[in-house]
Amino acid sequence: FLWPIGAWTGVYERTFIAVKPDGVHRRLVGEIIRRFEKKGFHLVGMKLVQPSEPLLKEHYWGLRQKPFFSGLIEYMRSGPVVAMVWQGLDVVKMARRMLGETDPADSLPGTIRGDFCMEVGRNVIHGSDSVKMAQREISLWFNPDELICWENSSQPWRYQ
Ligand code: UDP
Image 1: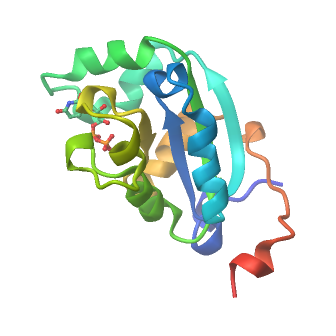
Image 2 (image 1 turned 30 degrees about the vertical axis):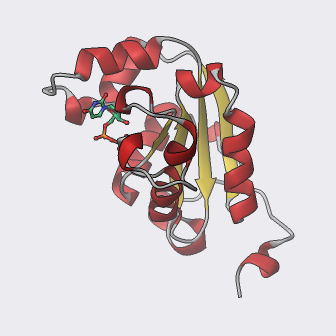
C-alpha cells in the first residue's frame, strides 16, 4: 500500500537524492549508495534516468532567475542521473549533512561533496533541502507505483 503524504514523518520521513551526471560518469554511484545504506536509511525507490529539460526546469524552478540556471540545466542533462528515495528518522536533514555544503570548497572532509568534488557546478549529488521540497521532488521524479514499501528486519537494530 502507499503511505499518504502526511504520513512521511518520524521514521517514515523521506528524501529525494540524485547522483548527478558527473557522479554517474565518475563511478560514484556505489560509494554514495553505500554511505546511505551504512548509515541505516531505508531505500524505497531507485532508477537510472535521462532527465528531460522540462523535468529539470520544474525541479530547479526556484532558481530560474539565477545567472547559473541555464548552465545548471545543461549540466544536469549531460548524462543519466541515479534518482533515489531514502527513508528514515530525520533523513532530509541528515542527508544534507552527509552531502556537505552546496559548494564543495566549503564542504568538510567526510561529506560526499567534501570528499569527491571541487566545484559548485560539478558537485555530484542532489538532496532535498526540506521535508516539503522532498515531497514535491519525489512526486516530480517518481510515479507512486515506483516507491516500494517493504519491511526491514533490521528496524529494531536501528531504532530503539
Ligand atoms: N549551483 C551552481 N552555482 C552556484 C550555486 C548553485 O552551479 O553558484 C548549482 C549546484 O549544482 C547546486 C544547484 O545549482 O547543487 C542547486 O543550487 P542550490 O542552491 O539549490 O544548492 P543545493 O540544494 O544543491 O545544495
